[in-house]
Amino acid sequence: MEYVTVQSVLFIKPHCVPIMAELLQKDILEDEELGMDQENRLDVEQMIELLEKHDFKKLKEELESVHPVDIVDALEELDKKQRILIFRLLAKEEAAEVFTDMNSDMREDLINALTDSELEEVMEEMYVDDTVDVLEEMPANVDGAFLIGKTWRIPENAEKPERSNKKKEQPITLLDILQEQKASKYSGGIYHKTQIDLTYNSNHIEGSRLTHDQTRYIFETNTIGVEKEVLNVDDVIETANHFRCIDMIIDNAKAVLTEKFIKELHLILKSGTSDSRKDWFAVGDYKKIPNEVGGMDTALPEEVADKMKTLLTEYNGKEEKNFEDILDFHVKFERIHPFQDGNGRVGRLIMFKECLKYNIIPFIIEDNLKMFYYRGLKEWNNEKGYLTDTCLTAQDKYKAYLDYFRIAY
Image (cartoon, rainbow, N blue to C red; front, top):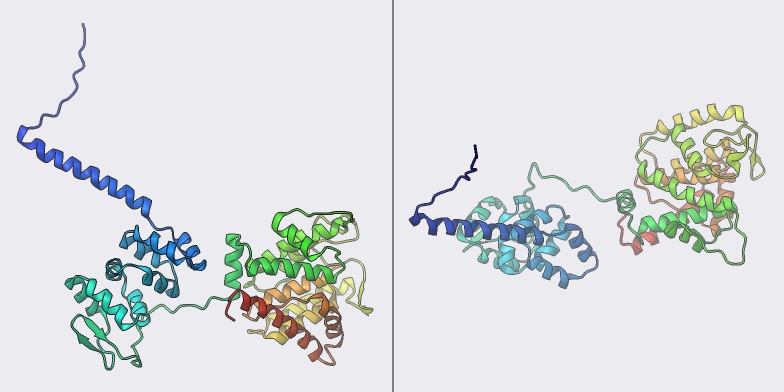
């Protein structure tokens, strides 16, 4: 027996054909528009990049091809200053649509920032219903405010009532910026500068013979150029390790200072060095053999654990630490000298971390301040001003970096 496959057929009445064709065409057009919307969807990162480069011409051109709803979505990811800059680049009709789709908080920010003429242009481009909706959301209880046509007139010196549930913007700190630039692998910013300068200077104080340029090459390219000179392998390894230590203090800046954290810094710093292959050298742990620093005795190996616990208990017992508290901890840490080697670098990393934690401008002890720094450590009990003034001088240098990168402090 033979079987015949019969395909089902959809029969359409003749008078329905034009309607079906119209609906099909509409679906095709909607699909095309959706595809175009996806293509024209605004890249927020690109927008921020163009803002930072002050390439407003290109940014304005990019905005012209983006749907107002997508612009509003993008604006929600920006800060207030960036929103205002973007809004001022929009064409009048587009600005009116964007303004209509915004939430009330974003509108308030714009109303406070725009001039009367700018605001009037936006309102005039809006449909009447949209204008009424917006005006109903605007605070009518502002002293001296009055309505002319579609536009509210608010005196410049009028105090607008604060929204009870308005989210307060948190100030951006140096730590926030360092963490952001580290995460995004941003090159040429304060994170990049800090990595190179702190690593070069802290290692140089301890005898590293690498130059500033060689330190920079290692950070930027993970290579080093050598011509007619001999390099100490430990210098190269400790430089690469120090970069990782800085990442660690940035990532954990808000954490409580503990023995475990301090030991981990030492482990990272000294891993892979020739010291790590010595039986008597404890990498990531306290010293086994007595040592001295600057001709002064330090804590004996059997005393280190107890002295470190006491120091950390005393330091962490203070709720808020100031500049002097951080320096005092550093002096006591260096006098204990808990590790066989690497105490100076670990100690300076701790100072940098604690400054970031308590929003104190950090500092880098450079080679020209080395002798003043050593004198300050030695004379702390008699005269705190020596070390304080040295570190404040170093802090002024770091402030100059912040000024250059336009970072508020």
